[in-house]
Image (cartoon, rainbow, N blue to C red; front, side, top):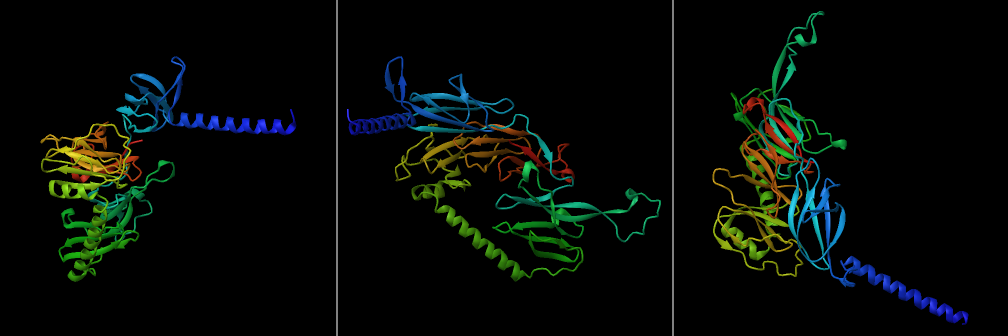
Amino acid sequence: MSREKRRFIFTVTTIIVVIIVTVILGALARGYRFDFKRKKLRTTGLLAATSIPDGASVWIDGKLKTATDQTISLPPGEYEVEIKKPGYSTWKKKITIYKELVTPTEAYLFPLAPDLKALTFTSALKPQISPDGSKVVYLTQREIVSSSSPSPSPTATPSSSPKQQQAVIEILELGEKPFGNLNKPKLLAKIPPLSPEAVTFTWSPDSRQILLSFTTSRGENKLLLEINKTYDFTQLPLLSLTKKEEENIIAAWQKEKEKEEKEKEEKIPIPLEKILKENCQKISLSPDETKILYQAQKEVSLPEKVITKEIIAISSQKEARHLTPGNWYVFDIKEDKNFLILSPQEEKTPEVRWFPTSAHLILIYPQEKIDIIEYDGTNQTTVYKGPFEDYFAYPFPSGKKLLILTSLGGKTESASHFYAVSLQ
């Protein structure tokens, strides 16, 4: 056999092998597996199981299969999938595996005994969370050494120096530093001693300014504060905003809010928008704007198809397209699916808010507990149970912690401090 002929045969053979390997790899990627018992190629689907935190075990129909961050090949059908990790809540859901499709399962596991860390050591009064959820402003008091007191004698100890209470406004950033360290409160303004009822805060829509209002014996004061500055308003009278200036600020902020609301409404599919406006309340887009949370006010049914474009649905959880008044629902825009979140009992009606992941919601039961539930109504988990101020529970932007206001020793407003509940 000539050299040219051997070279030709080698080239053709190489091409054939490459094609065969490519076809095999493609089939494996689509979930095809060879059944050695039946001696034939069978169609399967893939389950991509991930978890936060990682390193959890994956159980399928009661049998341990692997650890998370792995892809599992399964014949098409319905399976009961559990993801477990010692010290954390168990994630459990019925999953339908489709042939040649990858079904992702991202399980958030929450600590069974979360850490509770104090963020402030002085009373936090009149707290107001910023529109972007990244900071909170509040009124408190600090102890200061009186500068007008006589100089202490040489034998006096530091603890014997006269101290006074100074009313101050502080801002607590809900960001996290490296290694999980939390921010300390920042002084925003010093104000004259007065009753907390005399103070109000109004955030700007961009969370960069605060309209401060407080009343003293000399009258009402309206002041516009930049959150990156520090102010001293202890010397009266103050240069307060005029009524016209205040009205202009409020009008500008209202216009900005209306613009933001209009932009959000444009994200809602047109057929669904009309139904929600006429029959529902408390409509809220998820942080990633792919889902809609709402509470039904009237009995109505959603059309079988809201999204006109072709959709490959992944979620196999039970839908609820017939709405019952009082129930909370989430509509998934990507998959054209509607899920029942909860049917609240009259005596235990929680407040429902989005969690930063856009895949979870927070259920706040006043003075009782705080739960987190997935957007499709599954895996409801209690992350905090104990005393806290009514409805004051907000997730950190990272989703790793939860901010609550509590005294722990009982409902005493003067002793309420901010605490961080660890969620990871």
